[in-house]
Image (cartoon, rainbow, N blue to C red; front, side):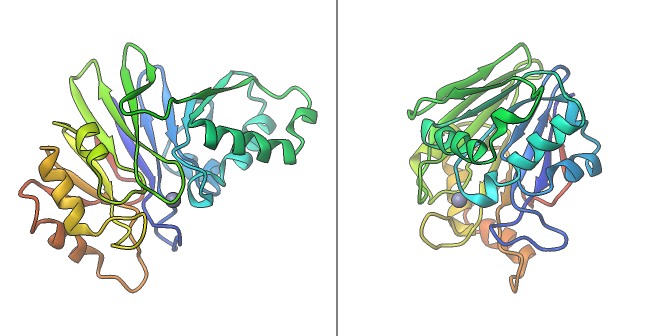
Length: 251
Ligand SMILES: [Zn+2]
């Protein structure tokens, strides 16, 4: 059965038990990493995910808490003698910067480096990202400080679905992207610029008629985290959970 694994759930400042927000989608033939926080190589091992199995990486936006671990993961994969190709998806804005970052590391000079393909996602609503026998993944632009996308994953063999808001203010794009999903993973970074407070995340879950809500990308320092779920319950009547690192959801 396909799974979603939370590899990190914290907002930009991690702590001992919460890495920056990123996750993996596990299928039979594809393992898809969504963003890549620091020290991903060890994190994947701890989650029981083989780095060799990762076929695709989707980058949501070029903020360090979401992408800064990718250069190290690519280096580690290469040092572990990876030969299989890897595809990296993102908005042109994001991919241009990731390529520049890798150029700064002079990756063209790393001998025998495995093939990496960059695939640009159009900056439009419900843009197709990838489709296989197992998954259909689409993206919509969301409202953050820089260009960013939310994602919807339809699990074609089980008929289940999820959406991930990524970092965003409450927005209609997520309501449309997440329409009728079984699970909405919504950020809960607070009511500051480019983020969402828990009651607003509940409203988005209600309006998209999501079957359940997982709050992610929350501040863990000096915050009563279980209370965030209670606040979201004031605006959404379905089940609300706090996403935690290493939590696995079946689809
Ligand atoms: Zn961000």
